Image (cartoon, rainbow, N blue to C red; front, side, top):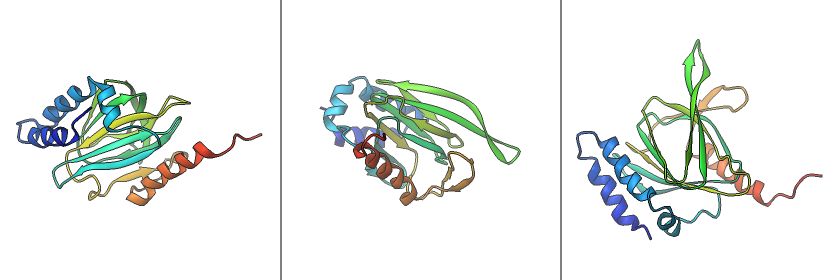
Length: 184
């Protein structure tokens, strides 16, 4: 099983390296090489966004995506490293053009894979699995919860604040959808 305390220490120590984001990515890649050990330490039984470490320099989140869950375009305004220990995460990247968002590419992540995001990235996330959760660890180069971020409306692409309550509601809604009866 992943030793969560040691993992946090390794990530924190990586911040002293000349390129901390790359050093943190290496720590995360080592953990993702043993996905069953990470799953044993951080089981995915519901949609959740849970901090396992938070400091001014570093935030580590356990993120579990519900089947089919979609997070609309958002930014982090700090570098981020994502690792998948179960399932998949499809990322769509956006850029600003003429006062609006336009699609600028994408990347699929699957179990054992990691992804580095720069501090100016805007992306949306989809769990492509329709019947299974996706387990992931997201690491940020700062206090994720203390930075003003944006979340765009999924349909209108209107920019709004990405406050903690608004983000948590997406996970609450995803979990509620799991227990709702099928229509028809």
